[in-house]
Each structure stands twice: as structure tokens, then as C-alpha cells.
Length: 244
Image (cartoon, rainbow, N blue to C red; front, side, top):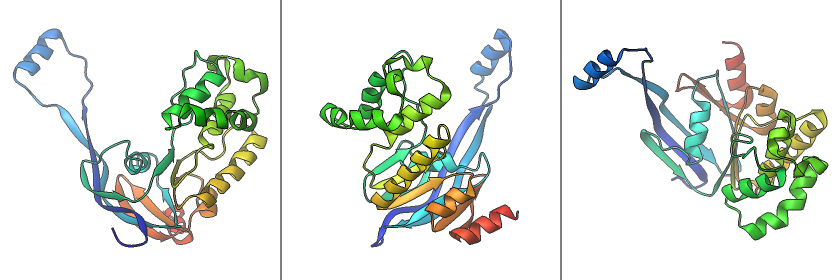
């Protein structure tokens, strides 16, 4: 890895195999199994993507739905292994990807704070230290003692973001998490996100909101159908994307 870089991606690819969905009789299924007819289809979520992220940089990732943005975030976070290419990362990656994905809806908000914080790698004594601040940030009040299945979608977003914002990031990856909850909480969460950006060594942001990208990132890459279309200064690449 070159000095000054925290992430280097070279010719990165990610392929999935999907199968045609078609209702069949038992006889047809047995016949195709017997003769091993392959009806799978290869889908390339990423195709030869190359870029670098330097220390202190903010990188935005833009593109239409299905462009490969979230897949790239999962690979950068080490949640998913690429099927081709090289990924080098220098530093600990913290990812804010799917709010509330790890909630047990039968447990209370209190219990889910502990559960999710442990998922994020905290020890129980660290969770206890952060607990009061997480509850205060959420603003859920007495509802924190209620099962999460009784929460509205906005309340779940509040709780999830309040847990996520407690991390101390080194390399921070954000996938479409800006603007959660109601207006007052959205303003508070946005302010907290900027604080987190200031604390981290490097930042990757995925968003369909170009103002979010402009406010957080100096450089942008544009993906379409898994391919890198453009890379460069945020204003230039966003202008290309919006004029397409």
C-alpha cells in the first residue's frame, strides 16, 4: 500500500449466481437434477473497480439503485469477500450500514442497546459506560423499557442511530443513514455525523442526496451496473451524474 493511503482497491469484482425461478413438476425437477442442467445466471455486482482513499479524505459513492454501492460498502467493511481483485485496508473500519438490522423485536429497547453494542464489538463494561448517553441521545424516554415491536419506524430509527453514533470511528463507512427520525432528531443526528467525520481518519459515504455528499466528501466515484464510470472532485463528478 502506498504511504498515505488507508484503502486501496484494485480491479475489484463481485459475482453472484442466481437461479431462474420457475415452478416445475416433481418429474421435471428430478429430470433436471439427474442430468445436472445448470440454469444459474451470473450477476456482476462489481466489475473491475479501482480507486484509493487517502488518510484524511472523504469519498462519496453515487449511482442508481443496483449500481453496486452497497455491495462495495460490505466488501470495504470486510463483511463480504470479493470474488476478484485486491482490497487493502490500513486501520479499523466502522460501518453504519443497516439501522436496526440486529434488533430482536421481542426485547426491550434497553436490551437491544446491550445486544447491538456487543455485536459492534463492545465489552459489557463499555456498554454500561455508554448506556445513559445512548438513551439520552435517543430521546425515547420511558419507551426504552418497552418491546421494540411496539415502536414506530421512527422510534426504531432513533434507537438504532443512537446506538450506532456511540462508536469511535477510525475509517467510517456510511450507507444511506442521513436523515433518520423526525426533523429535530434528523438535525441532531446530522450534527453528530459531522462530529464523527471529524474524529475519523477517512470516510466513505453512500447517498442519493447530493447535498449530503457535497457536505461530507471532497472526492466522488460514480458506479453504474458495477462499473466505475467516473472519479474525481465531488462537484465535477456530481455534475456529470446529474446531467446524464
